[in-house]
Image (cartoon, rainbow, N blue to C red; front, side):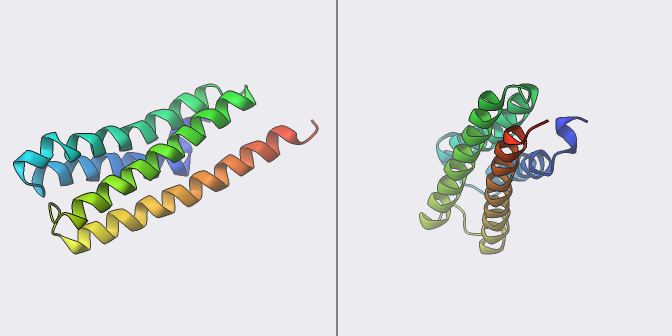
Length: 125
């Protein structure tokens, strides 16, 4: 199995692409380099931490640590998206709602995945 088979990775990959596109085409130029840059780094951190955690999956605490970091970066991404919408830098409400819903779904799936990893590593073999 590969990290590419994980639902959380697939969701994060799609969000990386869509958020990158949103920052290029939907934001004012000055935001591309301010909050736009921050939100791109935050969502890329979600994806990267899932991958790195998966690479350390045989070490329970490392795996969980990276998944929790991914969850925190997902929260950061959500906050940046909300800031863009609240300050009217992002005016496309449909796009905002779609990205926000998908970030919320990813956060729930990451929480469930963390719990699953904790339980799996706790069960006797």
